[in-house]
Image 1 (tube, rainbow, N blue to C red):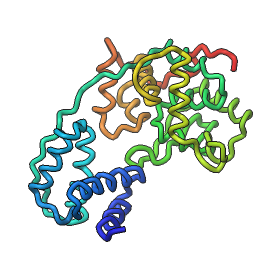
Image 2 (spheres, rainbow, N blue to C red):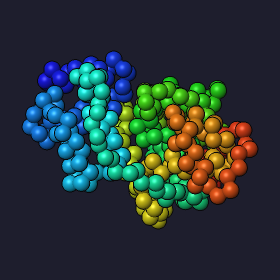
Image 3 (cartoon, rainbow, N blue to C red):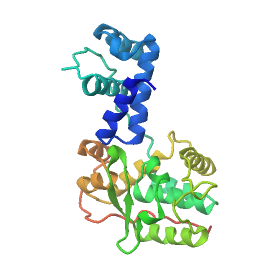
Length: 284
């Protein structure tokens, strides 16, 4: 391991970066070094500009991917190499504003009813019922469930932030049935080894299989259940600022986009809707 890589890891840990962010930033900087076959501390401003032109024009990376690379490289030069400023003129592709193919309530109902595996069914219900990100879902622990207060603790979510999410009566009943069947001890959803949490790819496969059984051909992975949670809560009248807290968005603009996708959205309901309890779920 090079001293520069060690310094960058130390700088990120000192600032409390999530493990996933650390890995992403290190990979981006490594790609820069491999492109020029030289250490990044030996590169010129012109070479950095040319590299980002390469990412956008030759590798055809999206604006989001280019921004990720830019954030990693900027962090390296400003916080690790101690540049006074990062005056590198870089043109990033404009971020596309696309509306995802949102799942309807009926489609979520079909999707859940198509799952015969109780573990996978509860996994998808939890993702939808709490609007969780994939990495948050698979890292849930049994101790994160507060049945008395009807709350779910999400530890080290995006931005390494903890938050509490409301557990509806319908989802809490499903989780209790799941526990009585599997008796998980540490991880709520574990792999074959109960000491290891379920792999993200396993959760994605369960979702894609459920979509296929339900004959749903809309694009996207399991994150579509988080989108569905957000839009369905807003359709039930939940105020945007409350949804922002439940989703763990640091910027309310990220939450407001869901309101823009709902025709004639009106705030009014003060409590979280029981999305799981209103599904017409068949017998397992």
